[in-house]
Image (cartoon, rainbow, N blue to C red; front, top):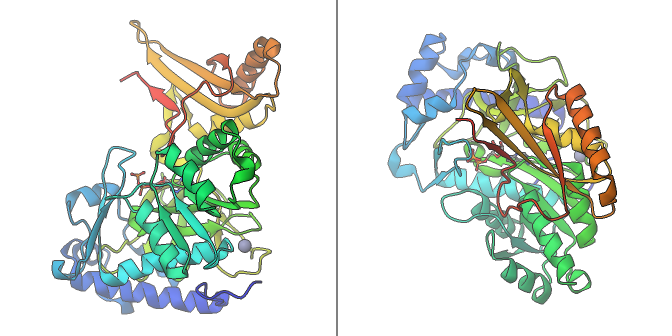
Length: 430
Ligand code: ADP
Ligand code: ZN
């Protein structure tokens, strides 16, 4: 295992002890600082951190939900005096609910630490030049990447999303070695680099991509087009400071999360009981050091699974799998529950497709729902085979997802590209 400067090399026992003391501290802190949490915990019979004997007691504590965040707007879960707050951030509001979170100076420091640890795990050093292609402003993304660069000592080039011309210019003129972006933006940029014949004029080695689910084809596509050494999936959300709560290490067998900062449980979203080890469920997060807006068993809505065992890279930090999507991304179509990730999974099995798709849903005057699935042909595939390909995709959709969409194959590059989080499903029924 490489020798890290910012990633602690703690043993499992030390981590457990750390989590227990962090949980006790958090309980005391929120009982003191938040009327909301104090009342919730009193209902559960908890009046002090000392009531927590072991981490198993976590399961007795109440969960917190996104509707609890709305209640305290614009300072939900606030557990410190407002004068201790040095910053507000808000989520981009993908699912319609903008979540505002407050930060103390210690919170900002922890945010930069978690990002810098991710960079360290990805093998970045002060030699690296990181071109940032995620949003600046209220969002945590841009500023998070920048904090991480400054903490580790990398050069940051804070361009933000969009602005392809400027990205291409800095990739060539500055020779940026790492890009921070969404997977969608990485794909878009790789296509532009190819189109402009810039591949041998740039020095990009790594991409750290996150903020949305990605699929393996898309990733291979931009890795190949840009001639990357490696790419890394980074997880995070505004509620967990921002990006950088976890990163997949160079062994790519799951994302290590910072277990000295967070406890992550995976629960069955219906029963709120833990799922069997290694199974998929909803990630529920408890923060261990967060001061301004701490999370107690916060239901993220994100679906993933914990990966049992220790990673072959040797790092003791536990891992979760890539985030498959959110429970509220689920579409109900003619009584069948569908997650966008399932469509990606089906398309992964067809080498003739590039993985990009667009799904449209609409309802006719008789109340009957229809689905159109547009799929991009891969540049290597034969157009003459479109009808057969569409039939084969339909059959697999019927078998695996239990729906029968109209399937249309389109030319490479025909479907929309995105500079931020992709929107591949257009539900026009409501
Ligand atoms: P929102 O998108 O709700 O406005 P944020 O901007 O805070 O909020 O984004 C956080 C959300 O983005 C996460 O809850 C998760 O659904 C998604 N996300 C973040 N990173 C990843 C990733 N690496 N893979 C998949 N989804 C991700
Ligand atoms: Zn690892």
